[in-house]
Image: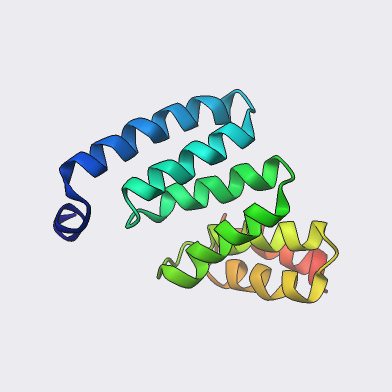
Length: 130
């Protein structure tokens, strides 16, 4: 938090949280593209908080805007050291949807190894990749 305050400042954090609250509303209303745009805007104000760009990726994915979803998923995977498996799981599921099975299994395996969603990610990995 201290590093974020130094990098972004209190104003940037406050604005990013307020924007993300609007994004959450649009997401809950299934207006995924608008939610994604707002999550990305929140990320611009606080680029140290991966959750904003992860939520943008999920929103783009649900809107079937796979190009922007992939770009956003890769930001989380490549630029942050997060070990929840959530991003890898949903990225893997998206890749499977796009019939990119070899890539899909790489990310689904990572999610399973990180035990995202407990046994759920393991089950999906085994179903898709075995």
